[in-house]
Structures are given as C-alpha cells and as structure tokens.
Image (cartoon, rainbow, N blue to C red):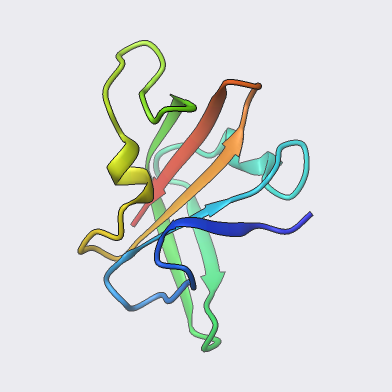
Length: 105
C-alpha cells in the first residue's frame, strides 16, 4: 500500500516552507503513524532527493470532519492547508470515523 498526498502541496518538498499532508492506510503503510508522539523523528526524502528530519510536535485523534475527538477543536485547515511553514502532516485511520493526525516540523 502506498501513501498519497491529500491536502497541502501535492508533491513533498523539504524546503518549500509549506505543509505536505500525506495519508495512507492502517493497517498498512501507515500503521506506525498511530504510535507517533511528540519528540519522535521522521526522516523523509523529497522528489529532489533532499533529506529532512522532521520532529513530531502534535499527535491528535481527529474525526472525519477535522475536529479533535473530545475537545471538538477544529483542525481542518491546519491539516489540509498549505500554510507558510515547512511542515509534514501525516494521517491514518484508527476506525471508520476517527483518524490519527501527526504534525511534524
């Protein structure tokens, strides 16, 4: 199973100062995403073969409408928006209606 971009910019670049939102299935390619926590490192290689290590800043359980489970805080535009900061947003399913979303800078 492969990962795909969904929101943010369509192709990962580690130095474009934008968000790349990458999604994939759990179980599958992104099963590990459900266990990521603040401080964990994620190393990626972009289309130009440039490497970058991102650090997880926030890991949340989000419903399908982009709201944090429990608080109902809206994260939709943080998840799918391009933004103005170099960021990697990873998303995988936890159930039919909830997802793990990880923000790494």
